Each structure stands twice: as structure tokens, then as C-alpha cells.
Length: 128
Image (cartoon, rainbow, N blue to C red; front, top):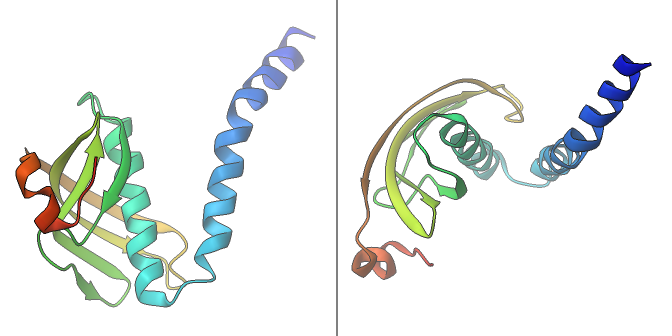
């Protein structure tokens, strides 16, 4: 009985996240392939950076901030990306390989850079 209760408790806490992931993945099908690749990789960047022991809690990521990303088939190389955490934008570079339908990330690597000064935000299309 305790195991059953533990599983129910775990599902209760996990369900909102799983539901939002499912809604996000379903919405990807409505996008063109290029945009779909950028969105799934931006989403993966937020998850991976947020899961790290670096103290960041991203709520937004963009692969095209400082420079446009390179689309190499199902791989996105974003050297001029950024994410927002704690009201600040931080540079990040990442390489993200997705499945052919661009709904799953197969591999991801990133390197977090320096914070972007707030006075540069308007030029990069960033916001608070």
C-alpha cells in the first residue's frame, strides 16, 4: 500500500510537467521544419541548463540572439544563443541534434557564457 501511495504522490507532482511537455511536443507539428528544430533545441537548452548544478533556472531560451544559428540538416549549431534566468540574459552556445521529424533531441552539448548587459537587450530583441 505504501508503494502505491508513493507512486500516486509521484504522479501527482509529475503530471503537470508531463502534460506541458506533451502539449509542447504536439504543438511542434504545426510549425515549419526549420522553426520546429529551433523550438525543440531552445526547449532542450532550457531543460539542460536548468538541470545543471550551475544555479540557473531558465524560463526562456533563444537560439538567434547574438547571431543566427546554422541549420545543418537535423542539427542546429547556435553559437549566438541566450537564455533568461533570474531576470538576466546569459549567452550560451549549443549544438543540438534532433530526430528526423524534429520532435525529439538525440544529442545536446552547450557552453554557458557571460551575462548580456541590459543596455544591449534592445539591440538583440531581448526583454525583462
